Figure (cartoon, one colour):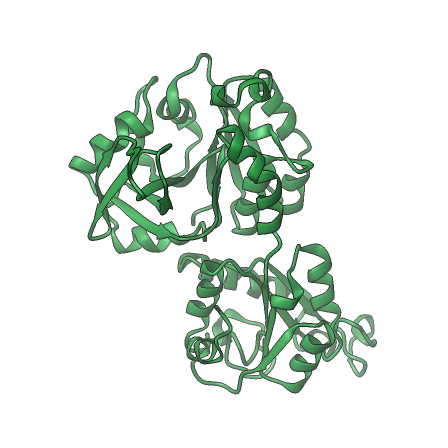
Length: 402
């Protein structure tokens, strides 16, 4: 299970001049928040838990940032800071943290962000189990600041120098998936971009995943200024609110055990498609079986945890979950009451909108009952009645994803 990510936080940021004279690039403010908050937020919502910050320049500021961090609290992240004794390059910085590395892990540049499904590397490397690494790539207009990448049959075959006259090129987006055996190719001082990856792609399989989402690198003054408006705008996302029984799984009557759970045809693929399209994906489900005494509330959480693991194995994830265990005619006293979370009331949807930065007019609710549709409509969300069959085909025919 891919739950570890490392972030390169050691660059000097010389092109930013006085902005980084005493501040590491990843800690520069974008709006009112350090840029690193954006990366931690994205990792957290994709289900990563173990985050290693690779620090060098002004490392004490990175350590202070990691202490009692609000984004880490929000998602239950474990932040560890590893400090280079002296500048060692991107590969050397990674090598310095080899003792902490999991069998598979993600590596991210600390000064760039691509809006992508961070679990895409799982599917890519499952297709190529012999690959030592996978890189996220993006086509970019006027790529004069970046080295370029050549890909054939889903594999990187070469890296090239900057192309000042190119109108468009394929570049690394600063997100890397590695297997632990990458460390046998690293040393105490080396560059991933200049030394390691160009050599590796000649002797090993280095897979590639292609992405078209929003991309920004804050390494120069002009792009740093653009980030002040573009990143907050990008982080306000459309969402899809999915009912559970009858939409994600067959409604076999009060499903609360893994052995009774059956995915609807196309459900996993649909969740991943929404992830890839940049939507927040939420589960909102009535669970009156708790109130009726058919299963304990803990069983709901255990099943949802299993669902998340299953989805992540296929490169997909749910950003958040809300469920309502209450029913006005419940047999269990603690759960026998009216609740504004129980659909057709819209409490679960409204709570998610309050907790997340949701673009409500562009959001959708998919349910299999009239109560789901009413809940979505009351929250101001476009709502769709799914009557069974292939969920992926339904979403495609309804043109819910642009």
